[in-house]
Length: 138
Image (cartoon, rainbow, N blue to C red; front, side, top):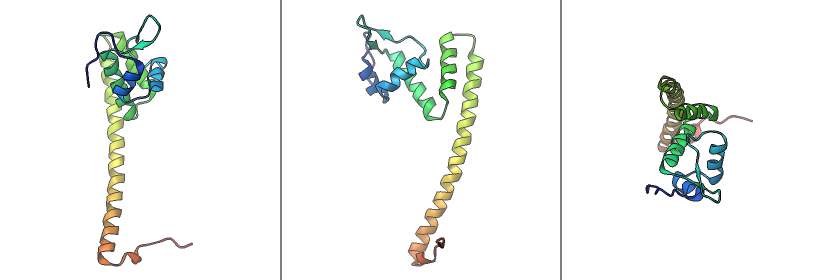
């Protein structure tokens, strides 16, 4: 990704670079998910700096892993508050990590079942007896 110059970039360019919509960028700002105030031009247009893009990336990754908006907001508040709350930030991240690991384990179990079903179908098709596969009667 190209670095943002000191003048910043438009919201459209920020959306393109971060992979989220303009609407999402505005929502993140309204929802209190950004840690610094987004700069504005004299005409009131948003100008995003590299630090803003980096933070938006953090937010999108946390969202993608299932972190609720309220928890991201809390994390943003802690980061914006500065030093002195690192223990709370750590606890928040550790709790989320445990959540993600539990969901990954469940997904792994589901994938194992899918793999088993694929193996059964492949085996039956290769053996020429796929017609022996169970089908519910109506």
